Each structure stands twice: as structure tokens, then as C-alpha cells.
Image 1 (spheres, rainbow, N blue to C red):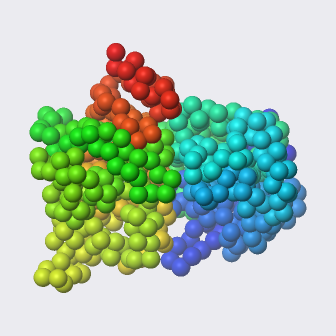
Image 2: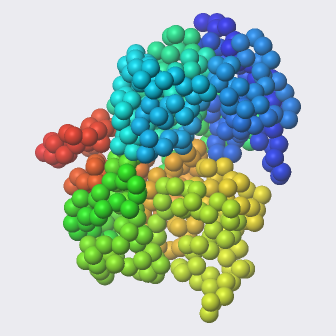
Image 3: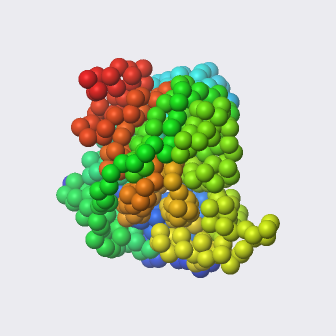
Length: 509
């Protein structure tokens, strides 16, 4: 099927100090086409879509949109021309309702009553029902994404850019989203789709362009290409899946008993009666839709949210009332989901970020003085071991691509000889090769005797690396059960809400 060209990208290049983000990029997207943009972390995908959306100006090359030269100097110009974008990180105000959030994203919003009626009509037309009066802070992650999408659809876009749109969705919500995107495509709206979930690309997309280190290295028809073939095109190498090392499970290193705690996060989720154990050499996978208590559970396990001492035990020692530093001394390391501001200080260098959590277990201070040589050596060890793409350890954390910063932060924790590891979203926004490397590193630490808790919304990831599996739903944790025998559909229902506990019992029966 030959489509009329909607967007033509011709010879686009963009450089930053020390790095060429895009070099001579050329491809086109047809009217109504769902086109994937693939590439490993740092390949230049984000820079390219920012140029299309008017956030960045290219150094060389041209864009043609709907047959006319296209050079938006800011997002409002791109939106006026018919380009809309749903970002990976939602830009919503939790203390405002749906209609108020939508109005903030419009150049000239209509009266609120009229806008609410339009939101209801458009959301129902595209199978994404929303109540305009609901507070965003009370919405699930999937519902928040609907707000972003409806805000775009009210602009009647000709091109919709979506960046990692399914990272916070259950399998059932993914199906709903795909139905909506197919409807948009059939009506003539083109979709530029960025995702590291290659099976989704195969299911949804008509064509794909692959970037590697800023250059176009190939294109394919996803339905005719395996996920492995696409991944290997992205990285330019053969991929090997993570391998488990056989090893007997040891004694319990982390025990949690009837843990309940109010959330310190605005619009957060209270933890309710959570109990589980993790043995040496064991990986416990915890699934759940975003906003069901994942952040609170990590805070409680890391020591940032303190509870009664006997609620958490590390190596048999009561630790619920210990702070993060004392828990690190006891052998527990933690990596939160939020890369910018929680896991890392964005304006500090990688060396300084290595010091922030590595000082205790890597002995980076002596009598109150920082051993900068040792700290730099630790940072560079992580950079080399985890293939972090950066000009050097002196670079600020914010200068790295999201995936490369993720590799650094996970490596920083795993390279501290931990006995207990707690990680929230270990491969979020990370390409296939990097995700495989991170998962292998986690399995290696487990094989060496660490007990591991992996909190993730990537179900394939949990099924690949976890020994035991549980679901976090509205602050409650289902009873952990062996991964063997579980299906994606069963897990999706467990994650989905009101029937989660019943499904869990049904699955265990």
C-alpha cells in the first residue's frame, strides 16, 4: 500500500558539545502510518522528535510537513501545524482536575463547561473514557495517560508522537490503547511511535526506522521482522538472553512482616499489611500498575520511610527503624524509579553521584575526608562495566540519555557487594541490549548470594528473572508464588484492580 507522504525528514543533523546526536537522518512517514522509531539509548531518538516538535532546532537538513517547509521554533508552532506529542513523563498537575489540566495545554481553551463536554465526547469516541471533573491525583497511571492523549486529540493532530506510551500500562490497557491508535490511523492520523518493547512494535507498526549512534542504519516492516532481528539491528551485535546460574537458595536475608505505612507522597498509596521473605540467591518480582504503592514500598525498604523496628529484618536483625545509611551498612542497597532527583542529583557529576550512595560500602571516605581518587575509580568502574555512554566520569548526570543514566545508577548499587538488593523499574526506558545486561547483572548478584526484590511494570522482565512473583494493588501485596506456570493474562488480571485478590487465589488453586 502506497501512502501519501505526511512528514519528510531530509539530512537532519544536530550536534552538542562532545556528541553528534543526529547525523544526516532521512526518512518519511505517510498519512495514517504507524511508524516506529527504534534505537538503543543515546541513538538520537529524543533529539530527533524534539526537532519535529519545535523544542530543538536542527543544525542542518530540512523538514517538510504536508508538502510545505516545516521549521517550528517552539511547540506551539508545531501544534498549530498539526503535530502533537505525548511525552514519556506526564506533565500533569495532581491538584487540578482533568478539564483544568487539559485547558492548561491549550492555546485558547474554550469555557470550562464546553471543554468538559468535548473531553467526554472525544474520550468516548476513541474508547478512552474520562470524567473531566476527577482530580488527576486520584487517577491511575493509565488514566493519566488518557488525559495526555485526549489533550492531544482535541487539537485534531495529523501527526501524533508517542514516547514509551505503554511503560505504565497493564496488558489489558495496552490493548485499549492500541485499539485507539488503530482508529486514529484509519482516520488518517500518522503516529510516530517510540518504544523499547519490540513485540508491541511488531503488533502495531506499519514501518520502522532504526537509528544507531545518531545515524539511520536500516528500516524494516516490523510484522515481517522478529524482535530479535530488530534488536540486533539497533545495537549492531548479536544479543544473548540472560542466563540463570544454578544455585541453592540460602537463609532468609530480608523479612517483611505485616508492614503498614501511610504514604509521605501527596496523592500516594498507603501500604497495608505487606508480608514476604527473600532468601539468599532468590529474586522476588513484584508487579503492579504505577501508583499502587511501588514508591512507598521502596521508601520503606530503603529506610527513607521508617516503620516499627520488627516490621523489616535484614539478616535476622530488626531494621524497620534504621535510616538508609544504617541499612546500607547492614547490606541493603536500593535503586528508586525516579532517575532525576531521587536516584541521582542531576547537576552533580557521575563521580559525585557515585559518592552519594557508595561512600559507606565502598569506603570512599576516611576520617571525614572524601577519597576522590577512590570515588573516581568507582565511578569509572561502573561506566566501563555497564557500558555507560558518556565522555567521562566528570560529566553531569543530566547530560546522559535516560537509558545511560539508568545503567550507571543500577551499576552503582550492584557494584557495592550487597546482600539485599531492592530495585524499582530496573530497565525503564532502556534499550534491549542494556536491559539484557542489567538483568544479567541482577541474576549474577543473586547467584553470588544476594537476595533481590525487583519491582517492575515490565511483566516479561519479571517472568524472565524472578523466582517468586507477587502483585502490589492499592497498597496490598498478594501472597508470593512461584513464577513457573504463570501466564501474562493471569498476571494482567491480578494487576487490574478490584478482582486482583480473587484472581491470585484462583491462580494458586
